[in-house]
Image 1 (cartoon, rainbow, N blue to C red):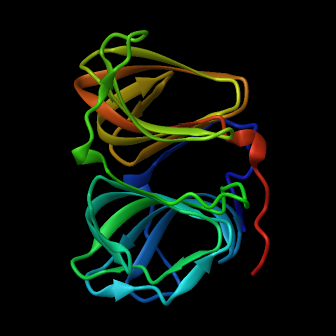
Image 2: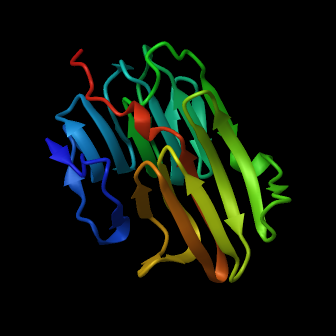
Image 3: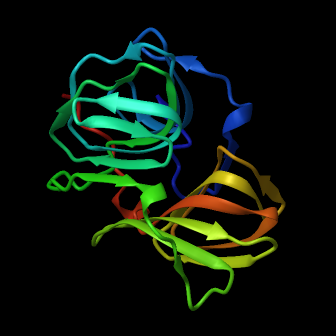
Length: 226
């Protein structure tokens, strides 16, 4: 399967308007945003676990990164409520599920295959930092290496924000609303811009909180079957 697999194109999707599609596991559904591959895939998705659902134990050959949007995600490492940011590196393995149910925004098979860095962050326990170069913007750093930077940004009401993306960028709205070009974004809206782009956005009347990844698009590749 290939979905939004041309990374030279700007892509806008509004998650709440997309249909839920079944996964191989009962009670686990997904809204696909981009994908290269079948069940072993380089993929960006919104995934919903019904109460008491879980996947069988598996290895993440290409790594897994996600943020919990609603409910509580669970595996052998612990319980992760809404606001948790997790990176499970290549060759990590777990049995994911949720007794109360949860929704996550997840990216699969998008790591450096030599990366072995595990990240567990409760965003609510961190203090956002004012960006001195961009008034009205607060930043919560989540991860940074030579390939990419991941962070949450909070934009105050009506703040205009410019994000240079020489190596591409992705933005996912967590709270509030923004406008960018002719598009209006709300929670679960997703924007991907290609290499040598710039995002010029404005927060809505109630401000916005967004998940943002930059720098990673030069490293796009298809997954290897395991």
